[in-house]
Length: 493
Image (cartoon, rainbow, N blue to C red; front, side, top):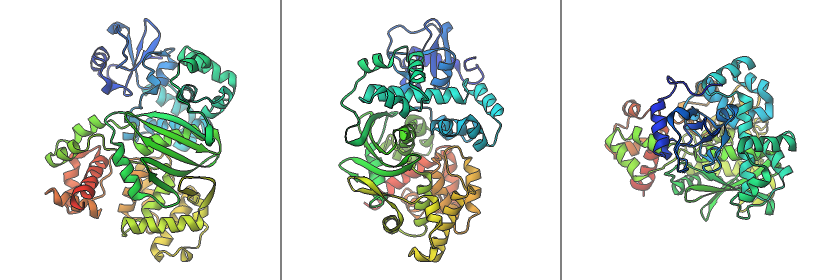
């Protein structure tokens, strides 16, 4: 097992980051110290900095762990926000990392993951080992360890429950992994953990989700409130609640942005769904984004630089359910946001599933692709074209013609979507933006976007807008959110 090669990264820059405790590099790279056998985040507060000759660098905690390094007890490197690189890229390695983070290895095994990616198991191992220094099993193991540590330190759940929730096959495997990765037993981790009563009372598990700063949680809540479907989601007193359908059954997730982190409460039928719910919550809130990097890229255009300065830490919200995001996009075709929300609420009430235990005003989970596909388009109360587009999309997702999961190649997903009747470029752009968490979407045909550009004195016709947006690659989705925020807050206050 070898660390990152010189032609992979600028090791001089990484070494300087470690020596200066530069937190901007946390999550992008991890430093293994050969003299101690410990790996850290670059900003580790330990008073003694390692010699450069003892530094090795790794892209993920899994790679450092696979090389025999233990997580630092002082800086908890596995608890940092992850690298946004895996979401920005759309190559096979990045898609594999996204799928593993979403729990694909635990649900499907390595062979199932490889099949979903369209490669052999051997080829998948070779690619991941060559670029990351860890294979799919090591990445999945690190994911389980990270979830287990969070539950041990933040809740009063029994260790047997934690082992199951984190995806371990046995208590022995759970104990062995915790000891190997953190150099502590589960009991020792719990005795030193910062628990604050986050047990499973009221059927909910409460965890804290770290986020890279700056983080504009208020505008995220504003976004969710504007788009909320009655009965399915709500924003009340600074908390976003949303129903979600997971492999073990429906549940409700509550997210409360705070200073430096997000308080998350998970009301789940199956505790084993927790890792996927946690990861999808991070994707929903875009917690792994690097705001400073994005701001620097967008600031090359003066008008956009001013917007970025006004709203530091603005995120590009995703979706808890990629399919639900696609349904939203179809309903929003050529109608106002209020009209789209009204249609979605009516359809959810008529065809959704009532939750056995509602949380606040969240009472319903949206239909599955199979349930949507079984509906008669003529009885949905929609225009004929929109109804057929909705049912056709659901059928395509149900039969696998269209896939919207994190491992998908976004260009391939776009091509499959455009082949469906009633699905055009604007709809696909919105699906890429939210369902596929694409950081580089720019929907030039969006009316609010055009009005925001015009108000700033920038070209607003599709051709001119597209040309202007070229300088914002690969973060055009964030540019679009800054323009939308400008439109909502200043053009139509």
